[in-house]
Image 1 (spheres, chains in turn purple, cyan):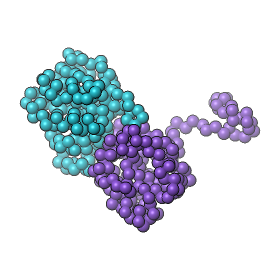
Image 2: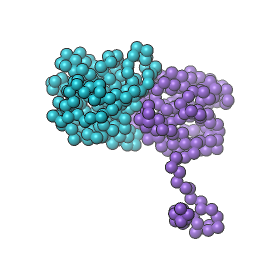
Image 3: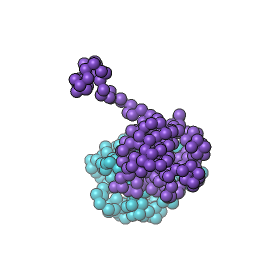
Image 4: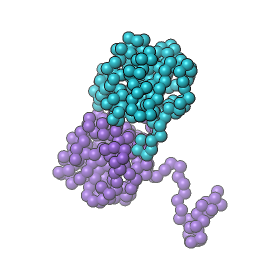
Length: 191
Length: 170
């Protein structure tokens, strides 16, 4: 094991032989869970169509944004309570808390996200973004195995506050799919 | 595709779906996904499987599925016991798609082919990364008592997989 590591880290150890190898060890589980201080990934999301790439890191570089992560469009908690909460409180987020954008993100494709947004109410303040390959979601360590109901990995339910491009606060549901701390009416109190 | 008319339909095929009930009629309400055991449910019946690359996508929504909804009575009068609309979208999305298409009949099922597994196994899947992934191709199959009677795949548009072609084959 040690010899394999030194082989992988050869370049770094040659540069600083006495220091610990700087290379990252491969983590089978992917990125660790997002925390305050992290940057928004530069991985593209998708907006109005599969060809419409959205650079959320660029969009959230200035000002306050809320990223809302959900396991799946049209699924129980998401449709009935979680996202509607953000849609109805969006004007308060904007006028009273200085939030310039609320982004709903899920592992569905753009057609599904747009259809869902139409049912729930998209607006200038609430945008629906697709992460079909789950690259953005797993870069933030928010993916979990949802095969039983969804057939693949999905995002944990969470809300993330981004200020000037950096994560400043996170509300990640401890059981992945419940609705408690990441509910809009709770998040808005803590801004 | 590796399946053709006259072949036995593969055994052990399972889809996932949410059964329609009046309680979950609103698009924003949802039931729980359960397995659809093809052999058990349809082993001795006549079923039309219509596969679409994506729920809520342009062609599927505008051209492909609505005609099946409109002509469902004609299909059943010609001996079809059930229509299954299949895609790789998850069961919640498929269920919502069914509601949006105004389908409330329990023999008109919107189901999921998880990870397009079944479709891939018979050479009927499509790889459309990065924003779409592996999907089920656009196709229609008539299965009667476990035997494939008709199978057509459309590379562009809706032709062999459309309701008129299926009706003509019944």
